[in-house]
Length: 419
Image: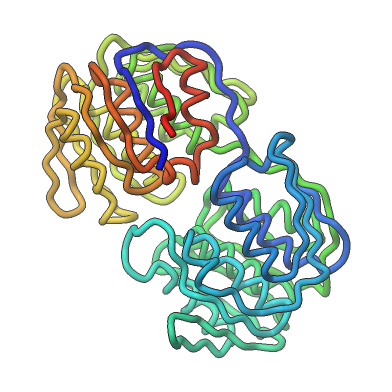
């Protein structure tokens, strides 16, 4: 397995371009299963391990997918989608694969999908989906690790999420596309990626209203048409590089994203002493000599993103004072704290809360990535550390970050991938 070798303490300076959003690209690719005629062209699709995984799922389901990773261009023809079953050997690689349930149910009137794998961030992450499909009138059963849903056509109805669910909102939008009646999602996720998916579907002929707000309405249509669409930039990748620049006291221009999608992240970094200049399609961030402490609580969008919690914690590890981090989205998402302690961080965890006493300097060590975002946070911490660090299991990072070591090297980091 590959690893990163990092000699920390180098200021990050220069310019970096962010690829398309993984969390928007994956559901848009899956959503193309709803288009039963013609070729769907999707641009700005990042060349990531998770994209390779979803292509395998699409191929199995009968869709023809052509992907050029250099051009980051994908063409999907779903005319041959002739099965309603997605097996475990394909679904185990990532949780987002469960999104095929909605399109298969809408298209075939039934779907049999294995419970997904991917990052372990809490028990039963698909319960929101199952409850929603039942409320829409589908007959849903679970047996042998598979979820089976049947309804032809799906009646539709009102859905209420106890807390906003990113993939739950998308799956319901897919399932409701050809329903008998309109569907209303209350307490829907408001993430920019949800808006991106809705824009794609609406361009194809869907009638989705309210995406980006807590109430989303889907009026049924008879069919969707093939279209060309460009995926928006990845705000989470951009946020990672922003924090990396901040923690090294560097100055970085980040292009390819809407800075409004990072408003809360920017607020926290300014609070910690950074200077940020937003632009039309990016921003410039400059870190201070030493960061100030902060307190942050993760919360569904527009709150501080749980996916950047590990990166921000890395920054607080070297801040001048005591910081507090509360994780409300995934309470089990503190696995990275053990690895950061190996670098010399002073972190105490109790339940969903972490207290971080900033130290003047972290020190290099051998550390390990446990999931995509934890791995990114550990890399950020290693960039700030003095001496050599080895980050193992970087295949987790590869699922969500394209050529991270090359991008960081290009802005001044001393980082290499060792095969």
